[in-house]
Image 1 (cartoon, rainbow, N blue to C red):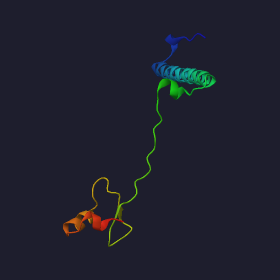
Image 2: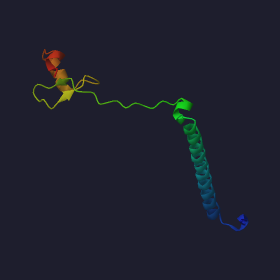
Image 3: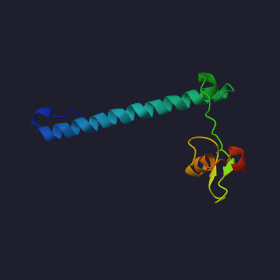
Length: 104
């Protein structure tokens, strides 16, 4: 395929440049996916997962923390004990209560 670049306008050349850049990027991504599939298949044939071979560990998800404290005036307001204290906890502590008094 031969394109006469000298007869093209600047706009056409820039459009062509963008198209070429997109095609190059797409080509590289396709080749990476193909290579990864081949490697994963080979690892599976040998009885391993690819993550085991490259040393990548899976990230464990945390469960949400259970509430430990509740507002005596409104039981729907709770706090896990982590992070910043809610206003109702600070108000109760200033009023002379202890955290144990707010425990669920």
